[in-house]
Image (cartoon, rainbow over all chains, first blue to last red; front, side, top):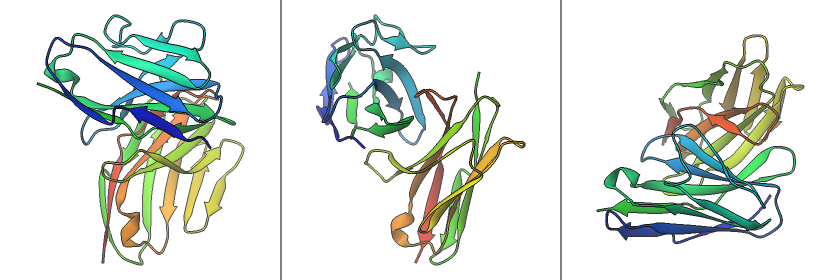
Amino acid sequence: SAVISQKPSRDICQRGTSLTIQCQVDSQVTMMFWYRQQPGQSLTLIATANQGSEATYESGFVIDKFPISRPNLTFSTLTVSNMSPEDSSIYLCSAGTGAYEQYFGPGTRLTVT
Amino acid sequence: GENVEQHPSTLSVQEGDSAVIKCTYSDSASNYFPWYKQELGKRPQLIIDIRSNVGEKKDQRIAVTLNKTAKHFSLHITETQPEDSAVYFCAASMGTYKYIFGTGTRLKVLA
């Protein structure tokens, strides 16, 4: 398994601003992902963070709104841009290790006012 | 694309009883099926998984069964305890790291 940390754990932001969430893994991993989880809902994949190339976004998510960086095999960031109250959610990163297992970070609880 | 249905959405059982959660997937190419447990305010934790070349896998009080023909898989928890209370998510993957998650089951174990 992998130990994954995220910063910040929570934040309250004003609409129109941006927030960058950091995800750190304690070992090199092949795959890193970003998910969104609305309260009481399931996990929705935002994008796959690719090391050395542009992230791969899922339908309904675009790079201008959710720019992602992955400078190395242990670190990634997700920025939520030009936020609106609809962006209030929990954002989780995950790391793929071994044969297809994914392990999750603790999440970042974002509230947009 | 792949779709994963999960039932029931909520499940209440008496402590010591068994709990069963079922998921159905749509794409026959799916070959990896993990289960996650998420306690309130915590991260999802991988509790058990199964690959398509196996019909059943067991780890102490939890087990997962897979029926490839019917395209469904189930989580079984025996001798439930209050600490089993959580939301459980199933997922399906087509041999990559990309998961499609089910909608979740809120399990309540009544003492």
